Image 1 (cartoon, one colour):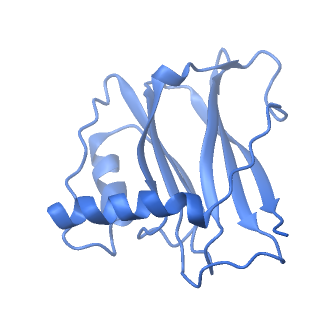
Image 2: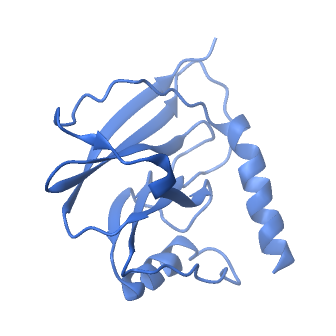
Length: 168
């Protein structure tokens, strides 16, 4: 168990050295009436660079069974698997975004914000990749972010943003 905590701490400590974030304040792609969900209503459950999710994914998880199945896939390459974090699905939903397998360091995925309209939840996702001039670590990454927010039965859409970080 202690080894798992150290592994996650190591991954989290390495994040600033492996990724670059470029966030812009515009909300293009969102309806004009979309209102940002306050940050205190959105929490990050997982932010990892090395996972069992080899394919890109955008998932909305509304049940404990779906959460357990996702957790198993997320940690498919890790033994023993960390315990499943408890989620009250009467009050919350889980949203997962995965970039899929990437050939080197310098790749990242993030949820920049969650926005609500009368009938929909919009999740703004930013994928960042290194430019041609970047020197990146020779590691295979599978970046993932998993967030928790207030339960809704509304449709969830993903607003995609892509950034290429050019190094000098």
